[in-house]
Image (cartoon, rainbow, N blue to C red; front, side, top):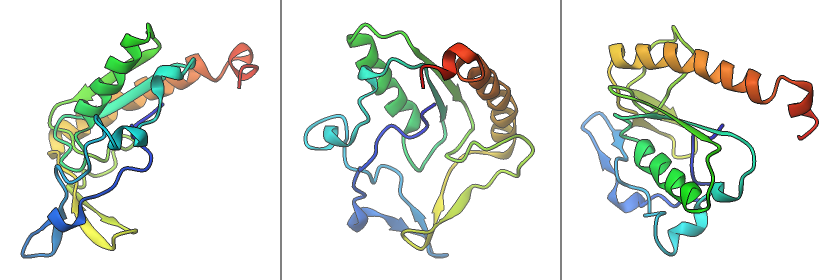
Amino acid sequence: MSHCLFTMCRWMADQIVFTEDRFANVENQLEDITTEPGIHACIQVEKSHCPILFVAGEDDINIPSVFHANKAIDRMKAHGKTNYTLLKYPGTGHLIEPPYTPHCGFYFHGAFRVYVYAGGEPKGHATAQEDSWSKILGFLRKNIDRPEARSKL
């Protein structure tokens, strides 16, 4: 399962916008990883033989997760891969956690030591958490929790 589609992508820190409350809005503040030189930060999903589950919020203001999931899927398709599933949710921000956890429109980023906006709205986020959780568990049961799957690890 892959939520984050890149590993070593650089933030453009000089372009981060701070609110009066000192919350960071990092929307569109990552280097472009779809072209050079940022493409080297991408996980090479097109080389994967295992199933990949992308879970993305359409209102993720932290990372354009649906955009990046679709870019990864395009790379997989170009290499004849069909071992992916995309779950995308409207009204859902960056932190899609297990169901019944409260929606957090922002979170504390430990590395940068700032509060960062995550996006989403409570109703859409709750719906996504409930729906994605059962699908994530089903994905794991199907692809990992079987003797033949474990032997491939």
